[in-house]
Image 1: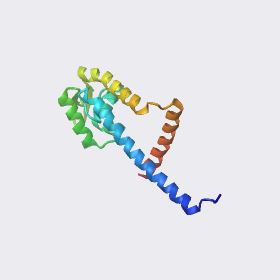
Image 2: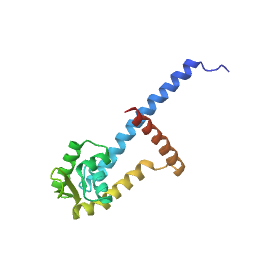
Image 3: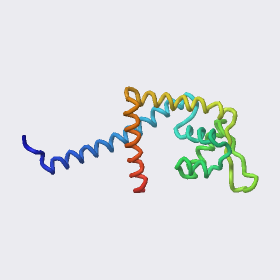
Image 4: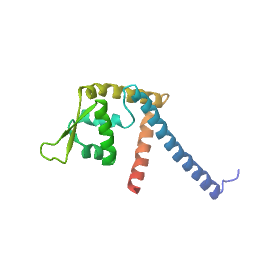
Length: 155
């Protein structure tokens, strides 16, 4: 049996890398779409869930702290917070010690939404990971973490 040529192996390896990167992008897109659809039943839009959960963990954070923790720009977070406030999920209050700062607090409606957000996330996870063993999930998580670290270090 003839050995595969080095260039043939390189070509196959490159094709595998292209396919992997394509699958990563498609999986990320599909998972965001799936979660977005689940969140609509709670009256929330994509990205708002992370803010609700961040405030559930530590209520009263400033806009800039929320933006930093979630890895988004401050203007984007301002729009998200303003929309959540208009929907009645959060309340924005000026800082007593620094007039330039605003702090964000969950309203009663926002606190009620936490359970719905967690349920939407669990349902999305269940749908996305069906027929995968705990070992598969652990291995995939480890590999994806490494990919994320590689990408983050290149940014």
